[in-house]
Length: 134
Image (cartoon, rainbow, N blue to C red; front, side, top):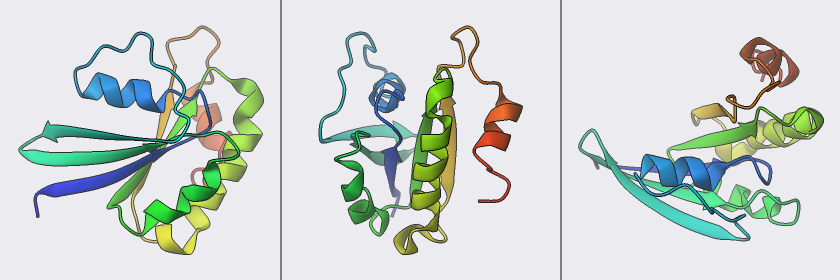
């Protein structure tokens, strides 16, 4: 099939919906926090890509695992400007990576908000999130 299904997750406020709306070519101002679930669809290189955008609040993270089995890959979005959430990002990302139903699936870690002054640089982010050892 030429259809690709992805799951986009990350902590609340990371910018998941904004990124997806931007990829669709939509307006990115006034995007509100996702409380539950959004579905984005776009065409890229002749393929239809469907992305499940699930909220990142602590209460909703428990449902992420319900989507792992049904997707081709996972996009984990990190707010690179939020130094205070690095440890929480590490814990949550580890849960995603180590879950039985996500094993063997490609996982893209996307560092968002790098344009904000004092955002965490790539090297520190890779080290803090232990990306080489996950």
